[in-house]
Amino acid sequence: MSGINKYKVSEELFAKAQEYIPGGVNSPVRAFRDVDAIPPFIVRGDGSKIYDEDGNEYIDYVGSWGPMILGHNNKLVNEKLKEQIDKSLSFGAPTRLEVEIAELITELVSSVEMVRLVNSGTEATMSAIRLARGYTGRNKIVKFAGNYHGHGDSLLVQAGSGALTHGVPSSGGVPETISQNTIVAEYNSIMSVENIFKEQGTDIAAVIMEPVSGNMGVVSPTKEFMDFVRKTTKDYGSLLIIDEVMTGFRVAIGGAQSLYKVEPDLTCFGKIIGGGMPVGAYGGKKDIMKYVAPLGPVYQAGTLSGNPLSVTAGITTLTYLKENPQVYIELERKGSLLQEGIESAIKEFNVDALVNRVGSMLTLFFSKDKVVDYTSAKQCDTKKYASFFKNMLQQGIYLPPSQFEACFISMTHTDEDIRKTVEAVRNAFKSL
Ligand SMILES: Cc1ncc(COP(=O)(O)O)c(C=O)c1O
Image (cartoon, rainbow, N blue to C red; front, side, top):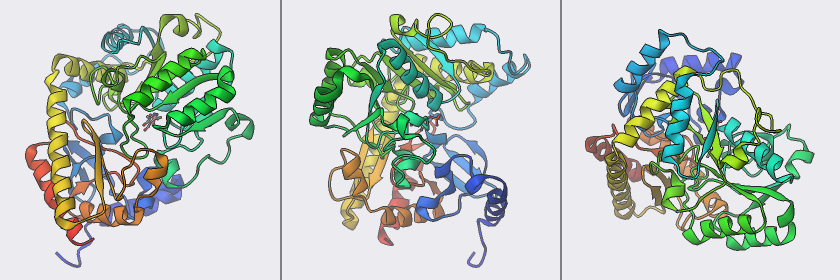
């Protein structure tokens, strides 16, 4: 096969895309710049597999960055969508579906009593921040270094994900007057939260956090840290916003907040609640949610919010997860199978690397030392990750194109997929 370019069509499309779309992509990480590669252009997916324009098959560990927990081309979701399509695509008027999904979310996530649907995770966090400010009458917010909450102005300060990889701690175009109100704390550091609150606690509207961070790679919080953040925010009259855009319905049916037994004031959702369609949501206690327009003074709206197609895909996915609790046991089993396989390859080839995992979210870090926060994540050997990534791609394994992202396992990943993946890891380690 040597001499045949197996990415020819993707390369041509990428060259053309760059003429019309900034960087050729509609979200920066998709450009594969951090791994110095050309992105395959994807045409379809089925179960755990995706296929590119050149006909290459990959075992997919990106899963559209989290939503595809049931795998690609899920028959249940597709059938419901087809039924809904025949009833028109959007009304901009109330529907029964919105009531159903709101009821479902409040039933599954105990801290949420009322919920507002939006169109993306970014909108969810932006709106939750506005609500926290409107509710408390305070302006400052605290976020954690390496946590990413979408691209809203106040939250693009030492953000993870694409912003972390590109070394852009805050984006161009964000006025200082806005970022001044964002205080950055260290993840997993009680002392950093304590100091910030001692100095400015009475001005802080909210702390926003990823309850398991996926955007500097997978980093889990200690229980003490979570409890401390909850207690401190309460003591100072600030709100705790837990951003479950990635973790919601992924790490447990009740979200990471149910795993860590912490009750936030507000929660943000996205990804899985749209089953692969664009969606977001924020919700929480009724007395806070009643500040949202039209009930209260905090304005927030959306032409396509609660779109019947997104909501249909979301209801179908959430209902499946609710009715099949063994999903989370199975995802844990698959996750630990993959983790054990990679860890034994790390030992076998004596690679400076380690695996962090929570359920079906996993990151292989090229680091000797534990990764527990942004500082330790930044120590990773990103060049090594890039070579590893390219080698895996060549072997048909589609990983996140950045060291600072999570791999997602779906219900359709088979033990055979995982075995093949571990074999590919061994091959890649051999040639590192
Ligand atoms: C934790 C978290 N919050 C918010 C967002 C933003 O969501 P979206 O990309 O849908 O705007 C993301 C995206 O990956 C995320 O991981």
